[in-house]
Length: 261
Image (cartoon, rainbow, N blue to C red):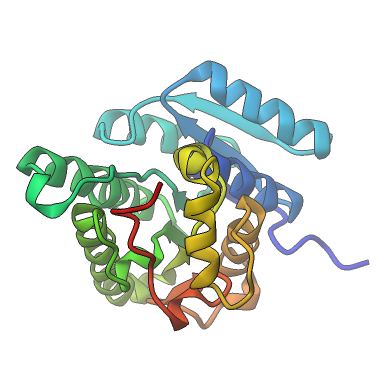
């Protein structure tokens, strides 16, 4: 039997107690990586760690409670991960978010919030993490179909995810000489804590399914599988890309939820 593709590697996942973040951490651990998950609430991180270890008893999973918008906290988390085996190979900045509001009702504060959540958090993690990738590595950000498809009532979120993908392309270009690959996964509507209210509304889900050729919504494991691929040697010639994992939704459009019940 061949060795696990990520055996011996160390990974960090920010936003690691969220649905997608935890699924990513589990997928990386299943492929042999030691993993540190970072988030703001230690209790939630410990719960996520327990779920991963329950499924993968041999997994090495560390936690660090801190703010993804704090350079000190992120630096301390990365240092703790690096100290596990004197290396950092994989970084998944999974922090993100935004709120629904029609454009004419949105505020500058809304825009700044979404830029911070979706760009600044990734910028900090990538800049500090890349400095610890002594032998190259893989950075995988979590974008959204909103980066390329207009989404009524999500103007600030769309702008921030589009900006994230612009950042990824330039960082990938610069860091290629260091053997560091930088990519993103672009989820469609995926079940998570952040989308709980949307999944609670059959009318909203129906509107998404109308625009999804594969006729189902996403699960965190769908996104995690793509992250694990991009982290692996199988993707060793892939950088600067944003891969849609969306059931084909990008072939159509985002629904207009302004009038959804």
